[in-house]
Length: 450
Ligand code: TYD
Ligand code: MG
Image (cartoon, rainbow, N blue to C red; front, top):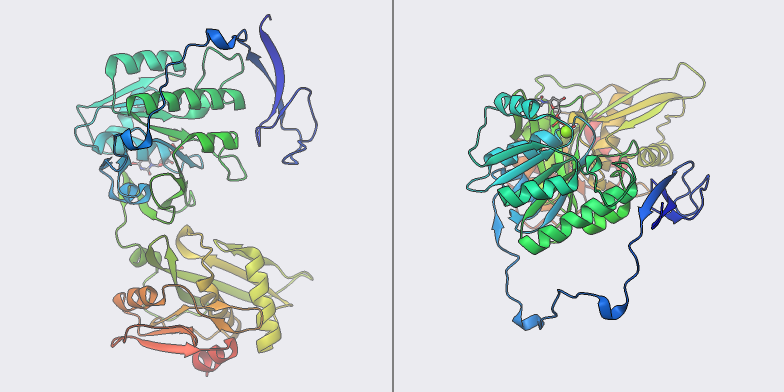
């Protein structure tokens, strides 16, 4: 075809190559190169270029990016840094079935006095209507269209002039200017950048739903993440009802906030007090269970750690960690072996964070160690005890950030004793909770099991 040429793109990292390669020499993935045909417009001479942009002095530029509108969903506003910034482009990624379409429809129907166009390339208008009735929501300002062609979408935009545009999903979009199929790297890049230009020119807010590959990264090249202003990640286990939303990039706010939802029969419900639901309220004490205080974003969260230590039947003991870094579990086991003389080498060890939550807060170390020891000796930890401490390789309990926030959250939820590092600097005096300071992991055994 005249004016077009064929190039190969790595579908994993977006590297471009003139020839097909078996292995990408940038990201190292095998068999990821796919041929794409790109149209080349005839090159323009410099004097023929039409310029429609105009440089402005910084001090003359008006427009306040801090004008935010509420999405009608408090937890989403929180993650966005206090509401939606007009003209921003937001990418929402997550596993299939996690609730991306549900969240976006809920936003479309909850948001006040704002015209929304919901473009779905995946579901028909009737399916979306069914979902809306299931959520018992309706709106006079929400338009639905099933469309995948970007040019057609722009013509709908021209007639409706929405303030918010939702694209479900970016992988289904196709622009006429490229021959490659929908979902390919060049289509994603091209459609996303055209939408981004439109968002900036017209101050329309655009939400893009993005798929996730089996490795858990956003499908499509990294460039997609560069194009957008905010990248939101919707996480959680399909089997669990709780969903976490966090920002991994935010040009207008911090990336430390998280929002928590519960998937109900009638859509997603915001969870204001997550600790209460993440901890099973047990009447009797069970061995192998410990409660950790974690900080997720700016909020403190109490989570339940469950451990099972059992004699290994086969030669090779099994190790498994759900919601927690596997290598860190191995490290904690090694510390217990070396510093407390607790041998796990002939035991299977299973570790689970309840509620499908994933954590990388090192402050849960102490609770994990406590749960492991409790399961190993089969002595329960009191359901009024909780933990906040990191463990060093030498077996010392190290202080963790924002200890006062953690202690007050534990106290609020009725815990009577919290184990923390001896070198933690606690600012406040607490009346209703005993703050137990320990410096070595071996002391824990003394307090808990003797
Ligand atoms: P969906 O938004 O379609 O996920 P995604 O767009 O991320 O692929 O949500 C799918 C799941 O949510 C589906 O398995 C059904 C469940 N669900 C509920 O439990 N309650 C509801 O009210 C709705 C709308 C969905
Ligand atoms: Mg969907």
